[in-house]
Amino acid sequence: MTPDDRLAALHARIASAARPARRDPADVTLIAVSKTHPADAIRPLLLAGQRDFGENRVQEAQEKWPALREEFADFRLHLVGQLQSNKAADAVALADAIHSVDRSSLIAALARAMDATGRRPDCFVQVNIGAEEQKGGCAIADVPALLAEARSAALPIVGLMCVPPAGIEPAPYFALLAKIARDHGIAGLSMGMSEDVEQAVSLGATHVRVGSALFGHRQGTPA
View 1 (tube, rainbow, N blue to C red):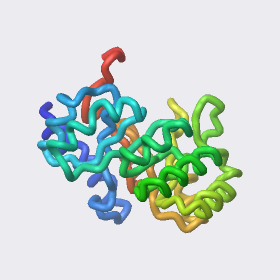
View 2 (view 1 turned 120 degrees about the vertical axis):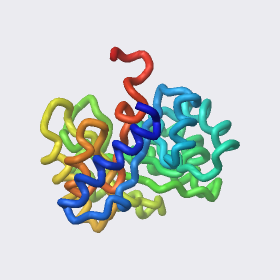
View 3 (view 1 turned 90 degrees about the vertical axis):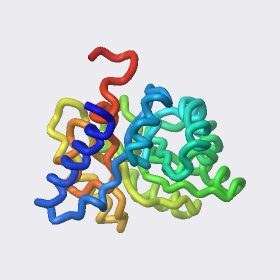
Protein backbone atom coordinates (compact mmCIF):
# COMPACT_ATOMS: atom_id res chain seq x y z
CA MET A 1 0.00 0.00 0.00
CA THR A 2 1.13 3.53 -0.71
CA PRO A 3 1.25 6.14 2.08
CA ASP A 4 -1.89 7.68 0.60
CA ASP A 5 -3.64 4.30 0.74
CA ARG A 6 -2.62 3.70 4.35
CA LEU A 7 -3.76 7.15 5.37
CA ALA A 8 -7.09 6.71 3.61
CA ALA A 9 -7.59 3.31 5.25
CA LEU A 10 -6.98 4.79 8.72
CA HIS A 11 -9.42 7.61 8.12
CA ALA A 12 -11.98 5.07 6.92
CA ARG A 13 -11.52 3.05 10.12
CA ILE A 14 -11.97 6.16 12.23
CA ALA A 15 -15.10 7.16 10.32
CA SER A 16 -16.63 3.68 10.56
CA ALA A 17 -16.19 3.72 14.35
CA ALA A 18 -17.31 7.32 14.83
CA ARG A 19 -20.63 7.16 13.03
CA PRO A 20 -22.32 4.49 15.22
CA ALA A 21 -21.16 6.49 18.25
CA ARG A 22 -22.79 9.59 16.73
CA ARG A 23 -19.45 11.33 16.52
CA ASP A 24 -18.00 13.48 13.77
CA PRO A 25 -14.85 11.75 12.44
CA ALA A 26 -13.32 15.20 12.03
CA ASP A 27 -13.27 15.47 15.83
CA VAL A 28 -10.66 12.69 16.02
CA THR A 29 -7.04 13.75 15.47
CA LEU A 30 -4.93 11.06 13.84
CA ILE A 31 -1.35 11.21 15.16
CA ALA A 32 1.12 9.36 12.94
CA VAL A 33 3.68 7.96 15.38
CA SER A 34 6.95 8.12 13.47
CA LYS A 35 9.32 6.87 16.17
CA THR A 36 12.32 4.96 14.72
CA HIS A 37 11.30 5.90 11.18
CA PRO A 38 13.53 8.26 9.19
CA ALA A 39 12.53 11.52 7.57
CA ASP A 40 12.33 9.77 4.20
CA ALA A 41 9.47 7.62 5.57
CA ILE A 42 7.70 10.63 7.07
CA ARG A 43 7.86 12.93 4.05
CA PRO A 44 5.38 10.91 1.90
CA LEU A 45 2.73 11.19 4.64
CA LEU A 46 3.33 14.93 4.88
CA LEU A 47 2.90 15.16 1.12
CA ALA A 48 -0.31 13.12 1.44
CA GLY A 49 -1.74 15.71 3.82
CA GLN A 50 -1.05 14.19 7.25
CA ARG A 51 -0.30 17.00 9.71
CA ASP A 52 -0.05 15.48 13.21
CA PHE A 53 2.97 13.34 14.07
CA GLY A 54 4.21 11.68 17.25
CA GLU A 55 7.67 10.88 18.58
CA ASN A 56 8.65 8.96 21.71
CA ARG A 57 12.04 10.50 22.41
CA VAL A 58 13.09 14.15 22.44
CA GLN A 59 16.53 13.37 21.04
CA GLU A 60 15.14 11.48 18.05
CA ALA A 61 12.66 14.26 17.37
CA GLN A 62 15.47 16.82 17.46
CA GLU A 63 17.37 14.83 14.86
CA LYS A 64 14.49 14.62 12.36
CA TRP A 65 11.98 17.41 12.68
CA PRO A 66 13.85 20.74 12.44
CA ALA A 67 14.82 19.94 8.84
CA LEU A 68 11.31 18.75 8.03
CA ARG A 69 9.91 21.97 9.45
CA GLU A 70 11.92 23.89 6.87
CA GLU A 71 10.00 22.01 4.18
CA PHE A 72 6.59 21.73 5.85
CA ALA A 73 5.73 24.56 8.22
CA ASP A 74 2.18 23.66 9.21
CA PHE A 75 2.40 20.28 10.99
CA ARG A 76 2.00 19.60 14.73
CA LEU A 77 4.52 17.49 16.62
CA HIS A 78 3.34 15.43 19.61
CA LEU A 79 5.69 13.88 22.16
CA VAL A 80 3.95 10.66 23.20
CA GLY A 81 6.66 8.80 25.14
CA GLN A 82 7.92 9.06 28.69
CA LEU A 83 9.62 12.40 29.30
CA GLN A 84 12.53 12.95 31.65
CA SER A 85 12.38 16.16 33.64
CA ASN A 86 15.82 17.18 32.37
CA LYS A 87 14.43 17.09 28.82
CA ALA A 88 11.46 19.34 29.63
CA ALA A 89 13.01 22.48 28.17
CA ASP A 90 13.88 20.68 24.93
CA ALA A 91 10.36 19.26 24.77
CA VAL A 92 8.75 22.66 25.22
CA ALA A 93 10.98 24.17 22.55
CA LEU A 94 10.18 21.44 20.02
CA ALA A 95 6.71 20.03 20.60
CA ASP A 96 3.21 21.31 20.02
CA ALA A 97 1.74 18.77 22.46
CA ILE A 98 3.12 16.61 25.29
CA HIS A 99 1.11 13.49 26.13
CA SER A 100 3.02 12.12 29.13
CA VAL A 101 2.69 14.54 32.05
CA ASP A 102 2.65 12.16 35.00
CA ARG A 103 4.49 13.52 38.06
CA SER A 104 5.19 16.62 40.10
CA SER A 105 8.83 17.02 39.10
CA LEU A 106 7.88 17.04 35.42
CA ILE A 107 5.11 19.56 35.98
CA ALA A 108 7.59 21.88 37.68
CA ALA A 109 10.17 21.47 34.92
CA LEU A 110 7.62 22.06 32.16
CA ALA A 111 6.24 25.13 33.93
CA ARG A 112 9.72 26.63 34.21
CA ALA A 113 10.43 25.99 30.53
CA MET A 114 7.11 27.45 29.43
CA ASP A 115 7.60 30.56 31.54
CA ALA A 116 11.12 31.01 30.17
CA THR A 117 10.23 30.58 26.50
CA GLY A 118 6.63 31.73 26.26
CA ARG A 119 5.79 28.52 24.37
CA ARG A 120 2.89 26.59 25.88
CA PRO A 121 2.40 23.19 24.22
CA ASP A 122 -0.87 21.39 24.92
CA CYS A 123 -0.44 18.90 27.77
CA PHE A 124 -2.11 15.56 28.49
CA VAL A 125 -1.88 13.91 31.90
CA GLN A 126 -0.89 10.28 31.42
CA VAL A 127 -2.82 7.83 33.61
CA ASN A 128 -1.48 4.36 34.39
CA ILE A 129 -4.89 2.97 33.62
CA GLY A 130 -3.93 -0.69 34.16
CA ALA A 131 -1.86 -0.08 37.30
CA GLU A 132 1.18 -1.67 35.63
CA GLU A 133 4.47 -1.23 37.45
CA GLN A 134 6.53 -1.11 34.27
CA LYS A 135 4.50 1.68 32.65
CA GLY A 136 4.56 5.40 33.12
CA GLY A 137 1.55 7.45 34.12
CA CYS A 138 0.16 8.54 37.43
CA ALA A 139 -2.00 6.23 39.53
CA ILE A 140 -5.74 6.67 39.07
CA ALA A 141 -6.08 7.76 42.70
CA ASP A 142 -3.49 10.49 42.13
CA VAL A 143 -5.21 12.08 39.12
CA PRO A 144 -7.15 14.76 41.06
CA ALA A 145 -4.06 16.00 42.92
CA LEU A 146 -1.88 15.95 39.81
CA LEU A 147 -4.46 17.84 37.76
CA ALA A 148 -4.75 20.45 40.50
CA GLU A 149 -0.98 20.80 40.60
CA ALA A 150 -0.72 21.13 36.82
CA ARG A 151 -3.45 23.73 36.69
CA SER A 152 -1.86 25.65 39.55
CA ALA A 153 1.38 25.70 37.53
CA ALA A 154 -0.59 27.08 34.54
CA LEU A 155 0.12 24.08 32.33
CA PRO A 156 -2.39 24.00 29.46
CA ILE A 157 -4.01 20.66 30.32
CA VAL A 158 -6.23 19.63 27.41
CA GLY A 159 -6.72 15.92 28.05
CA LEU A 160 -5.81 12.58 29.57
CA MET A 161 -3.73 9.85 27.95
CA CYS A 162 -3.40 6.12 28.56
CA VAL A 163 -1.84 2.94 27.22
CA PRO A 164 -3.97 -0.08 28.21
CA PRO A 165 -2.36 -3.40 29.18
CA ALA A 166 -1.22 -5.42 26.19
CA GLY A 167 -3.12 -8.52 25.19
CA ILE A 168 -6.31 -7.60 27.03
CA GLU A 169 -9.55 -6.16 25.67
CA PRO A 170 -8.89 -2.39 25.84
CA ALA A 171 -12.47 -1.10 25.85
CA PRO A 172 -12.97 -1.15 29.66
CA TYR A 173 -9.75 0.82 30.11
CA PHE A 174 -10.77 3.37 27.48
CA ALA A 175 -14.18 3.70 29.13
CA LEU A 176 -12.54 4.23 32.52
CA LEU A 177 -10.26 6.97 31.16
CA ALA A 178 -13.28 8.66 29.58
CA LYS A 179 -15.12 8.57 32.91
CA ILE A 180 -12.15 10.06 34.76
CA ALA A 181 -11.96 12.82 32.17
CA ARG A 182 -15.68 13.59 32.47
CA ASP A 183 -15.42 13.68 36.25
CA HIS A 184 -12.76 16.38 35.96
CA GLY A 185 -14.25 18.40 33.13
CA ILE A 186 -11.59 17.40 30.61
CA ALA A 187 -12.47 17.05 26.94
CA GLY A 188 -9.37 15.48 25.40
CA LEU A 189 -8.70 11.74 25.35
CA SER A 190 -5.43 10.48 23.85
CA MET A 191 -6.03 6.75 23.53
CA GLY A 192 -6.02 4.07 20.89
CA MET A 193 -3.28 2.71 18.63
CA SER A 194 -3.08 0.73 15.38
CA GLU A 195 -4.82 -2.39 16.70
CA ASP A 196 -7.59 -0.75 18.71
CA VAL A 197 -8.49 2.49 16.93
CA GLU A 198 -12.14 1.47 16.58
CA GLN A 199 -12.67 0.77 20.29
CA ALA A 200 -10.97 4.01 21.26
CA VAL A 201 -12.99 6.15 18.85
CA SER A 202 -16.26 4.53 19.85
CA LEU A 203 -15.49 5.41 23.49
CA GLY A 204 -14.58 9.02 22.88
CA ALA A 205 -10.94 9.28 21.80
CA THR A 206 -10.08 12.72 20.49
CA HIS A 207 -6.51 11.72 19.59
CA VAL A 208 -5.39 8.29 18.35
CA ARG A 209 -1.68 7.44 18.15
CA VAL A 210 -1.03 5.17 15.15
CA GLY A 211 2.37 3.87 14.09
CA SER A 212 2.55 0.48 12.38
CA ALA A 213 -0.70 0.84 10.42
CA LEU A 214 0.80 3.90 8.72
CA PHE A 215 4.53 3.13 8.62
CA GLY A 216 4.68 -0.66 8.83
CA HIS A 217 6.68 -2.40 11.54
CA ARG A 218 9.20 -0.22 13.35
CA GLN A 219 12.77 -0.46 12.18
CA GLY A 220 14.67 -3.01 14.22
CA THR A 221 11.55 -5.07 15.03
CA PRO A 222 10.52 -8.36 13.40
CA ALA A 223 7.98 -8.26 10.59
